[in-house]
Image (tube, rainbow over all chains, first blue to last red; front, side, top):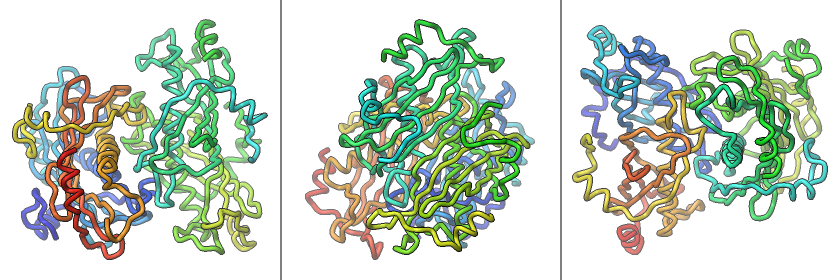
Amino acid sequence: MRAISYVDNMEVWKDSFSFSIPIKIRFSETDMFGHVNNVSPFIYFEQARIEFLKSVGLFRTEATEDTGIPVVADLQCDYLQQMYFNEDLSMFVKANHVGNTSIDIHYMGVVDGNIAITGRGRLVYVHPKTGRPVPISEEIKKALMTT
Amino acid sequence: MRAISYVDNMEVWKDSFSFSIPIKIRFSETDMFGHVNNVSPFIYFEQARIEFLKSVGLFRTEATEDTGIPVVADLQCDYLQQMYFNEDLSMFVKANHVGNTSIDIHYMGVVDGNIAITGRGRLVYVHPKTGRPVPISEEIKKALMTT
Amino acid sequence: MRAISYVDNMEVWKDSFSFSIPIKIRFSETDMFGHVNNVSPFIYFEQARIEFLKSVGLFRTEATEDTGIPVVADLQCDYLQQMYFNEDLSMFVKANHVGNTSIDIHYMGVVDGNIAITGRGRLVYVHPKTGRPVPISEEIKKALMTT
Amino acid sequence: MRAISYVDNMEVWKDSFSFSIPIKIRFSETDMFGHVNNVSPFIYFEQARIEFLKSVGLFRTEATEDTGIPVVADLQCDYLQQMYFNEDLSMFVKANHVGNTSIDIHYMGVVDGNIAITGRGRLVYVHPKTGRPVPISEEIKKALMTT
């Protein structure tokens, strides 16, 4: 398995996830090469990230000045194994690191026990009007690191 | 060519369009059957419809009480010919009929001189808060029917 | 409720469905108007249609000369009620009519007990190489009409 | 401007691109937060990458044993500035490094003279049947580095 910059030890990393959602791969998410299009994993990342954030009370579509709105600062995906229509993907998510106003989130997509995709990306909480970063509360930090 | 409920005479209908936009078919819009996925034409319809409405001043993303926001009431597509990655699609749009608060819009997608897809759908203008229909001005009606 | 061309009696029609799949509406399926984009229902239709066809053995990604491949001839959607991010959609599907080489499929999307979208579309089975229609077996016809 | 791991000097980097394609941002590519959904840039990357590869003869949908098919190994995007519906995006692409069987590709998306998104990702050429890497010819390497 090739080196991935944000994974030190794949076995340790793999075991560090606990939260996941099931995803059934749709026909419209494939392309003419016969497999899942390389854009589709980012749809899965977003869906899993939002479910994860909701589970700790950090996703609200109505932004407030206190909580801020989540803005994606960067995203990356490593494609380790082709995925196909109708496969059952377990999309794992965890907070790798929680800073004062941002979260480094890791992603792992597993099909039939094999890691098909990995990823990471930073999420920043900003004030809906000023765009300035909003601090993440200690309570939420704790919830994020234990989910 | 098979019968299409909203087209009386195909030759006459074909000649009734004047507005069109060019669309280059993207790789991500294909599926594992090797051609354009059946969802993709509705992306093209939306893009062409908005450009058409903008050309007569009927598309504004900031809704006002006077103009209302456009809401799609129904949409349909007939797939006459497969489309493929990288093809150049000419997406034609016209207002087939303009009522007091709604527009019946027709669509025709042409590749290499052949009609690949046809479609239609009704657009309603509603008040952003109450959801009630907002009348279309005589001026706009006129612009719609002559574009 | 407005008239829909393919629905005679809404109450009777509503009760005629038995097959459905659950769909969780994704964030990426919304648009800047705050609700589900009008393209997204066709993604849901496709997913539900394929699950329905699989349930009667009529969906195979490996086309054979005997079974043909399913090709969408036309599709339409009526938008009765706005749908929003995170809502739980029950996507119902049924074969409304089964012809010799094609199926007329009906769709009904329900959120919180209310019909949000309805639709229909014809599916044709064609020979993967010649493109000619392939007959649907009596056995499959029976299965389609009783699911 | 924040640090981006694959960019040493932003001014030098910005000037190193020459190939670009124009992209008009579609309504369906926005989300309920009012801006372009974070999945959409990867659609733009793919479209720009394919046009870039076609310009040097490295994109063929019919895979051969000699050329191999292009497979995305990884992809990443940094979101520097929100993008909105209807904006004109200039999507730049370049080969940052060409190895024996893979290419490191860089992406830069510019709106109104400002960099809105940056990105990179590795593309590998593999044998369509065996999946083994296929060497990139010296001629193609040269074309890639001078486009």
